[in-house]
Every structure is written in C-alpha cells, then in structure tokens.
Length: 292
Image 1 (cartoon, helix red, strand yellow):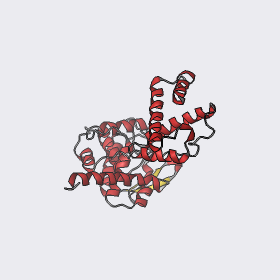
Image 2 (cartoon, rainbow, N blue to C red):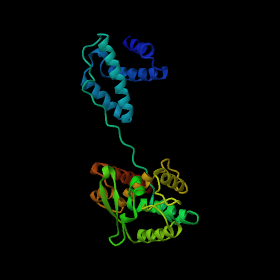
Image 3 (tube, rainbow, N blue to C red):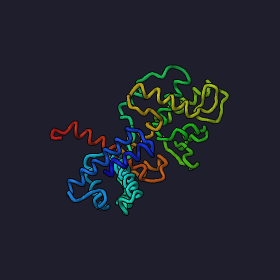
C-alpha cells in the first residue's frame, strides 16, 4: 500500500516521531474515506484539484481552519512522495490554497471591570500608588501603546489643547485628545510627582529615582493590578488598548475615528474590534432572548 510506504519513509528516512506519523496516517485515512464516499473507482493516483476542494468544503463544516490546513499539509507531503516514487505525475494540491486561519479576537475588559479597577481597588499610598493608577487610567482613556506611554514626555501633554502627542510605530506622531476627568487626574499626578521627585528626567511617567519608566516595569504594574479584577489569561497593556477600542465602538464611535485614535495604518486592523463587539452582542442575545 502507498500509505504504508509513505509512513515508513517518514519513520526511517525523515526520522519523524511516532506521534507525528500517526497524525499523518489519520489525515490520509480520512481522505481515503472521503474518496470511497465519492466513488469506488477513485484512488490516490486519479485525484484532481476539484476533488481536493470538495474535501476541504466538507472539512470546513466540522473543523477549524488550522486543522484543515494541517490535513492539506499532510496530503501535500504524501503527493510529493508519490511523485518522487513515480506513482503519479500530477500533484492535485499544486494550486490549492487552504482557508485563512481566523485571528483570535482581542481580549478586553468589560466596563464594570474597568470601573472596579479605577475606582474600587487599593493601590496603596504615596507617589507610586498614584502613578500606577494613573498609568492604567491613561491606557484606558487614550488607547495608546506601551511604547508610546513609556516615551511620553511632559512637553507632550498639552492641557490648554487637552491633547497628548505620542510617537507610534515607525516614528509616526499623532495627537490623542483627553477629557476633563483624565485631565484632573493627570494634574494631581504631576503635583505629587513633582513634590516627591524634584529632580527627574523629562519623562511624564518616572521611577522613584526620577528616571524614565521602562516597558517591563509598566507591564508588571498592569499585570499585577488587572489580576485583582479579572481572570483573563492576557493581562497586558495591550488588553487595555483593546478595551479602549471596544468601549469606543460600543458607544457608537465611528470606525475611522477609532482607527485614527489608535494609530492604525489600515482600517482592516481596527475592524477586528467590530468582531469583538459583535461576539459580545451575540452573548447578550443568547443569554437574554427568550427564544435564543
């Protein structure tokens, strides 16, 4: 049998583990079962691209795109083997492209979790407590990236225009507006910071020694405090960026406006958040509608 010869080739010439070989065998047997269901006269040597596409369609009904692509990869390897052995002259998968792997939806916090994070949990006393809360509020209120927050200078925060200037990817600068509540908290942070650390760098967010904060420090602050209110696996500054975007769209902000605020080059990048809000709507519908 051609399958047994191929599996031996994987074992003894390619030195694949038995676990991997079994996975290949399962995929090939599944394809063989599909061929039998289509027509008894079919075998691996008289398969064409249309038949492969039909198989992919049937797989998509019950499998994720990552699983389908793995099965196609197994089949490609098998047909390369058959061609090398002269068992077939045509590779039916030559022009077959698998389904695009779906991107995981961004993790975000619900608004009531953010209210708990900013209004209810304790951050302790002193400058560092005020700074840590201020960092979380700034991420949530502006949607800026970790690198943008770390790079923020005093001169970038303009209270007269109520906007911040941040430097994003590829050194592209953009302006992010902020509102009264954030402005008041930013002013309070500045007063406490200046009293506690009279000599410091130009950075807006600083360490106790006055030096600019570094990404790992900010990441740790976010992770530690998010753990107090949520159990999501990802507890990073980017989760707060996702939360900002999702909240804006949930409150009817235009997609293009959110794109500009986030500093996305492509609208397609921002559109992933519309999928997130739609998933949330589906959950609400399924939980609340009497016929769902």
